Amino acid sequence: MELEYNVTYRQKDKGIQAIISYKDNTGKWKQKSKQGFKTQREAKPVVMEIVNQIKEDLLNENTIINADYKYITFKELAENFIEHSKLYREPATVRSYKNAFAKFQLINDIKVHELKKINITKCIDEMLKQNILNDTILTYLKRIKLFFDYYRENYDPNFTIDLTFKLTHDKGTAVKKKALTNEKLNSLLNSEKLLKSKYYIVAYMSAKCGLRCSEVLGLTWDDIDRKNLVIKINKQWKKNKDNQFNFGTLKSKNSYREVPISPNVLNFLDKYKQKNPIHLNERIAPFSYDCINTYLNPILRDLADISIHELRHTYITMLISKGIDFKTVATIAGHDVKQTLSTYSHVTDDMMKSAHDIISQIL
Image (cartoon, rainbow, N blue to C red):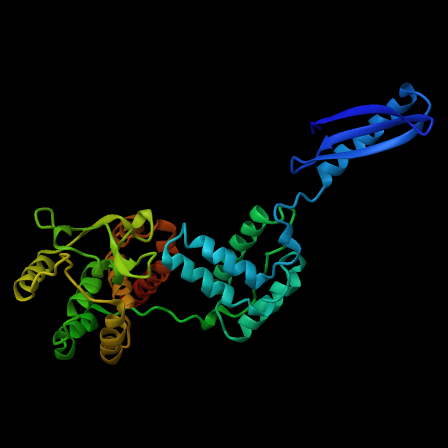
């Protein structure tokens, strides 16, 4: 490293004193001195040794960015991180950080620079006792990694902690999403109880178009392309940074898409529009999340033991079971292909088993 320094010599106590002035890693000037030399020539080799030692010390020094690094606890830094994230992240992302940090309460009062892998392990053990799934725990660990990155960037760049864990908790406890058969789906959509609900439109669009609930709630009438029989998904209904619901950006770049619709869906929308007044902001389904959770989901659970999200799952499952390739399904669903393969590979497994059973019977 290049060290900015200078050396001055002066007479002191019947000898020569060498004074080395140098800039430290924070840009401040500091000094070191050595005396007792008979001449400057005698002092110079020693001065160079001191200069080289200063260089080495500065290179290896813990260049702490924030002097509070020794005192800040996990809880305090988590609160700082959350406040910082509110300036740059979507409210849903900030909530996911809060949810993750809440699972590490055991280390709330430990100073961050003192944290070791064993501390994180104890938190994971506690989560496993609560039957929290592996994938969920791994998601929490990803959030914690961002937290420690923030600590390194703002407090101590030399901080390290091992966050690699081999989780052995049984994944079999995971609750699988349900997909209705075509017969059961039609029975649900034609049930009197659901048809009477003013939230029927949300269930219908999830089941017939595979839209996320937030996407249905964010649909406006100008998103319906009647000529090309597609719905343009370009926004969703979500909380903004002021904690108020409004139109917002979609979940990912893959979420921006055009979803093909059938003439039957278009006909349904036309009839719905005739019977229902157009909302001021042109929303097709001008409802809140609370209403969906409070009124629609209980109806769906009562009639078919499913949730609104599982109607979307049913739609995607049906596309795959009809032989539509994964790439096309991913585009329609607003996923990436890897995510679709991971979530819906069981569908092709079931199709193979069904084919095997048929072949066994006819050959």
